Image (cartoon, rainbow, N blue to C red; front, side):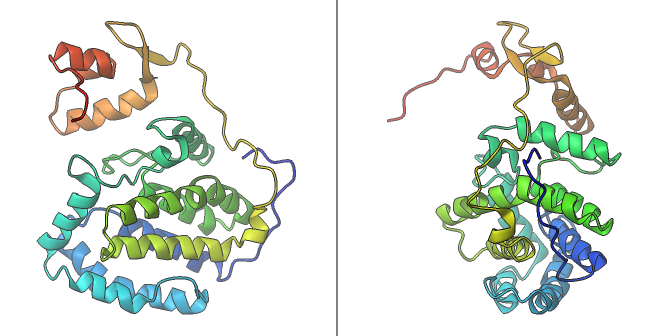
Length: 277
């Protein structure tokens, strides 16, 4: 978000409303398919919709939508697709994280999370109460891109995509491939999303050969951070922990452990680190 010169203003390949609909559709596709209606939409509607965008955007480097039909056909029941999604993205130990901050910063709740919060504040938006994840989840980031695109703010949409999505998606794809989930419909969707973004922001417009500058500030540890009640080490910002506490409380889960850092929490529970065999 800090550049020496503004990006070139590229025309949208489609009208802003249609481009926004693409990002919003992909955002919904990466949500957990909790309801049978969601599963039916993924099976019946999504491949046809993406086939239209595939043609209009001339996505020659994207996977063919016919392959998505075959990928979803491997999950002929709602429960089977939900189990696949959970095993890939949710069930511990989590195989693939969809929180982009992990790929941008190498850790959760880092500078990318702070930068996203500033973007949301600039547009007067906040996380919906029904969304039970952090705001750097891929679905939330794509939805925000759709909202910026819908306002026809092309330069801002480009800056946002290049800051959060284009650097992170190849790393998410690499992890899915490393996990051997080559037949997963979600790998297809990740590749399609990256191809659509790259088509909208071609490499020459992104300035891939230009020197890279920091896109968000590393945050300082200050009075806004919560410190461990045992050792005094910083844990995370009070804003981030408030999000976690609210989600845990709504799920009926305890929050007392958030007063301690990870090391002190483990020691309090009698856990110890042991070398791998």
